[in-house]
Amino acid sequence: KALPVCVLRELAKRSLTEEETAINQLAIGAFFFACRSCEYLLVPAAQTWQTGTLTLGNIRFFRKGARLNPQQHNIDADDCIILTFVFQKKDQKHDSVSQLASGDPVICP
Image (cartoon, rainbow, N blue to C red; front, side, top):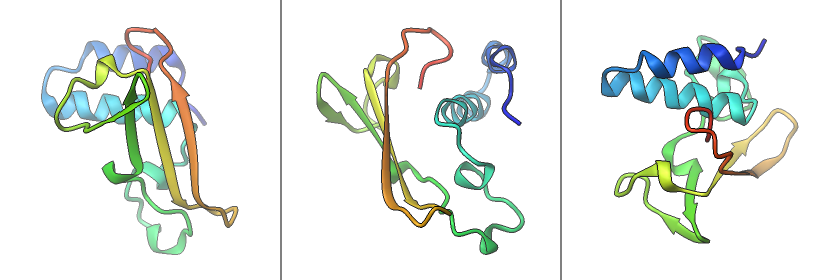
């Protein structure tokens, strides 16, 4: 089941440390892209899944059409994000999904 948006908003309010902020950003990204838990977390049965876990290399950030390095800029100002799923259960390889900025100050990939 997906978390309600109000839970994600509450997590964002409580993000005090860098680790808590990273967890919140991961949860919002997973929510926005309707990810399965095995796509963004290491799960106990990960070896039995065909789906690959996303890494930073699978996430691309853009501003005005230009690709940006997520480690060298403020991702809050990006206007597009693209996730590439290396392998999925539906036997699709390198399936990319994009999302434009929503304009919401909290719930925005």
